[in-house]
Length: 62
Image (cartoon, rainbow, N blue to C red):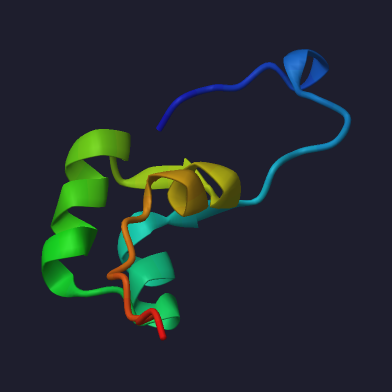
C-alpha cells in the first residue's frame, strides 16, 4: 500500500476503473481485455479505456 499526500491530489478526481471490471461490464472480449491490461496496467481512467478500446467494425455500407 502506498501513502498519498492529500494536498497533492487534484480537486476534480477522475474515476479510475479496474480494467477487468470495466471490460466485464462493457462486454469486451477476453483477448481485448488482456491487451488493455498489457497497455494500461490493472487500473485506468474511463477516458484511457475508451480511447484504447478497439471495437470490431460491425457497420456495413449500403
